[in-house]
Image 1 (tube, rainbow, N blue to C red):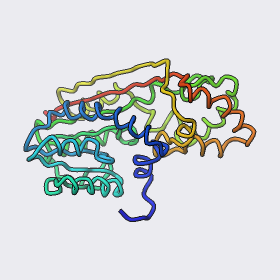
Image 2: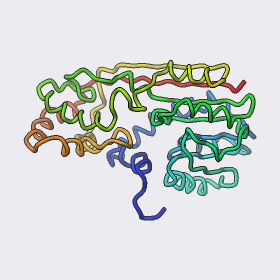
Image 3: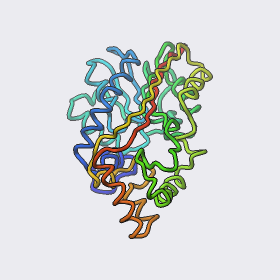
Length: 293
């Protein structure tokens, strides 16, 4: 990998989503491991098959698919060439380059993948970034062989949005509510609540898209939870985490929207809550699997 600046997907996936905090990076990997495993289990991927991992990122699913098999082919596909290069380095180290392929493509345009050429399509937290979700499903169907399977995971961001006005990322900010609204305005300008791809769908939309595209044996596993306690975290981590590739960190948003006095007041209120874990978390997610009939 060169020393030149990498794209936003690489920077976020490998650094900004962790806030440069090794403890958060480990916690994230621990959180994602069972999700990865379930996506692969739902795919029923077996020896000798070809798996296409759409939006492979750093290789979470695709690398495990290689580890689980000895004769299967895995295609790493991502919109980021930087992430593909990063994943390829790991594949070379594993000694599995001979049964791996790397394709730079968006999820809604897999034209580099021949029709009816793969047995399994997997994807995790990818459709949430794509406006043309119906086109993604059409591409999944096209590249699959008859009887091929798709297995995906998506968070349902609409479930927890918008928050009540007195809350900010699950924390009670009633005493500084007017300041918190300034920060939220920064994020909502980038990702409007009524039109952003992250917020324009839920589990029913994904189910209907799969059916309308022509998939059969469509199944979803929807999970939603409310936790009254958020894990305590260092204030510096909270400040430096970007929750998705397209938005600033809290520190950056505060600098853009607040005066120094407002930053001091907002931080004085929120920092103790963050460090004590005095907040709540609303989270929803869906696993979908289907077969090309």
